[in-house]
Length: 250
Image (cartoon, rainbow, N blue to C red; front, side, top):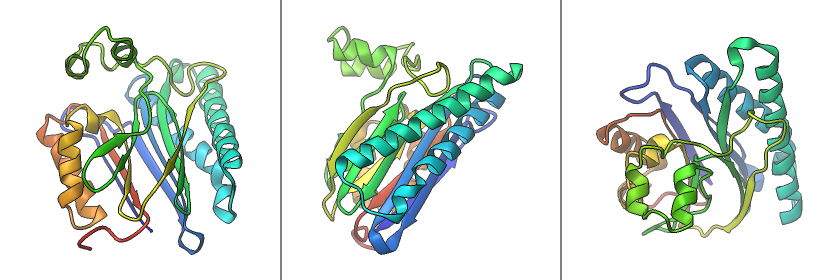
């Protein structure tokens, strides 16, 4: 298996509130990927994303030492999310400068060819099959909920002035519920986890084009970053990539 991640503050934001973490064991083909996009002001967003990612990895890290079935994987990610939420919410309540902070979170636990994904907010998980992007997660946002109800089109959603209004986040309430998804990965598939700094700047078809043509995951990540920057880079940009086998052309 191969994996790669990067994060960048983009062209507009003064600081980077995004963070990613990847933990992996090559011997049993197990990996854990997490992407968080903080909110609540520059300093608070940094704190929320960093503590959420660290807490999540610490809680779910036991999965790297053994093989779990689907139910156990989902339970483990649910518990890790609970721990991350409690960590951020508690910190926000103790220190006035952190009040109101929170973060999106999308994570994937891969064991063999099975990927279990959990998400809160509008950071996303995709499966790329060599030709097309398949969105796994569903955004928790005001605009996405309107799109799902048929009140606006997908094209309208991309440019809606309230597209960054999140309806669910880690650390802003005592409890938070994450959505869980199970995905079967083929050897040619790539798993992409990213913040909305990428998806807000580039359409899925352009992202797919980059993934199809880049010879390595590192070059794919660099090209996705450049794609978002070329689109305006109006937000922090984070990308985490995973594949079971060698990237085509590597």
